[in-house]
Length: 187
Image (cartoon, rainbow, N blue to C red; front, side):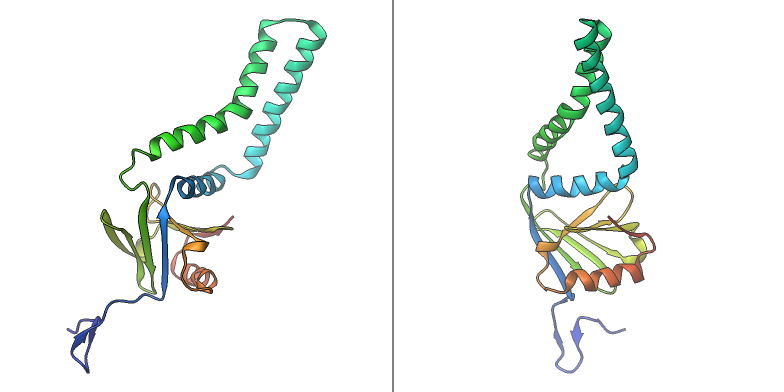
């Protein structure tokens, strides 16, 4: 059985060069961007806007009640709760994300993904390496800023558009993912 990395004519071992490489630094901002796209896919826009509309209506009604009827505990509670959910929860989520990201072993690591017809290889320089065949990939999500590749339901690889070394990588990978991964979607 021959080694696919070995050049049969020269007898030399050539380095494996997948056609598409994605390299970038895994910063807090990149992690937040990937998390936001993941969240947008899992919490679809009709439900988001329905939630925002209900909370906005509660905010308006509680404010109107306070202004027209005077002080009432229920109006104050609704006003504070809706303000917290609409304004402070997103700020708190970002604060918690920043705080937790600093504790991660892969914070500010150099990540490199190599994608080929056979599968995807992931490497966090100095930390970990993995390789998955396309049959083992759970799903792929195309976003305006890159791809989210899910090897399973709970783990995702973020492949940002600006991390690719070749100009046509996004279009080529779009075609590859549609052919190789059964669960492919776009935002």
